[in-house]
Image: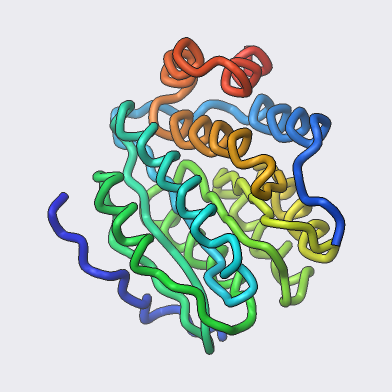
Length: 245
């Protein structure tokens, strides 16, 4: 798509350390979660994936790394086709924005590079509410969230996650670094929605790159598309495929 206007804010959104590298057990748990998911129903329509980012100041030190991982994910999706992606991010004083749905990963990657980090509190509740509203209009196949901390009421977030679970919108949460409160919340959101949780840092970038790509490819084309990716990539992608059989 040629239209690469910056994301616009949704008007109906009124709501205002140890080593972080993922262990083999955590990756296995992540893959097991994806295995337990029923494949997205193939109805002839394009898949839809909401990609949400925490753009608060605490993520500034490794922001470029995260953008690189996410761009790689979109490049894999481009090979499969059939996936529309929407970018959502929050930062600053109550700022939470979403882009239009786009089918060009390069255009979306360019949008992402226009986002810079600003100080502020997390707004995960707005992200979950937005995904619910989008899915009520047209089903969303998955929500991917990348962040490092959580500064909201966990019970409220779990209630919102439960609503997404009822709509069969799995949330895949990737935690940058390690903050215990955030980990507890992210794991519970993943459980309630039928999604999965995993940590990442510079040491596990390659591993998480594969997992991000696998989730996106699965949302776009189901198990067949994941099998094609496995033939060329192997590694964690192949392990994911084996556990889904």
